[in-house]
Image (cartoon, rainbow, N blue to C red; front, side, top):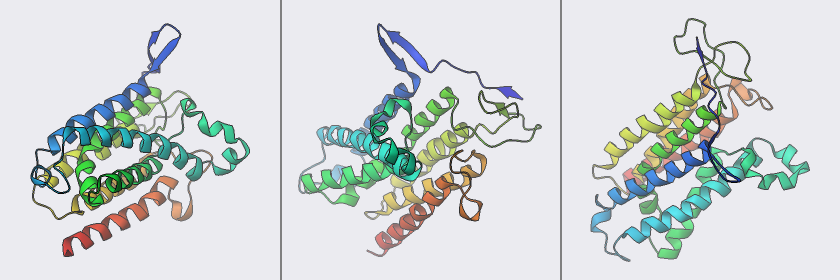
Length: 266
């Protein structure tokens, strides 16, 4: 039975400013996206696009800026609406207290989708071409975020068998060993999904197929790992014994399958 290392959430102090590990993982995620998106521009079909204009590094920088806005605004609003709508309705000013934590992946994803739609409209590019560029560049950033959760000792897993070699006791979660579900998510939704999606996207695909594959891949892996993750205390398990995260994955998987099938028939 392992003990969570209880790492100080503050990575370093710069005078009155405290730099948190969680913030650094977000920076790492954005840096990974930028580097991978630059590589994607050298792949087909993006390397051959001429209309309405060739893809450039400036486009990647713009996408990163718009994506950051989508992640932060969408992630926060998603957490407010999906997980604590009643509480925030009575404490509306707390919605802006992002530094206190509380971000939703599904909300962040919707925020990024909306941001990509606006950017594509502004640049007169096909929206699904934009999302096909972005999708394979996202999973490693998700892995970085999950490592931030692990460092903070938050979003721990459900109680595990005492025989589980990597069962871990988290501060604030009692004395029983639990699944380190943050690590599970980093490996599955992050590293494994990246490898599969990157290899899939390297072959000729119809516009929209890569985006659909991302939705299905993330949705399936997140749905599976939620069986090992402790449900939110204020929500518990919902209908059919599923968590909120799993229920949010259901439409994600369905939309991804529909998008992939639609793109395949085009």
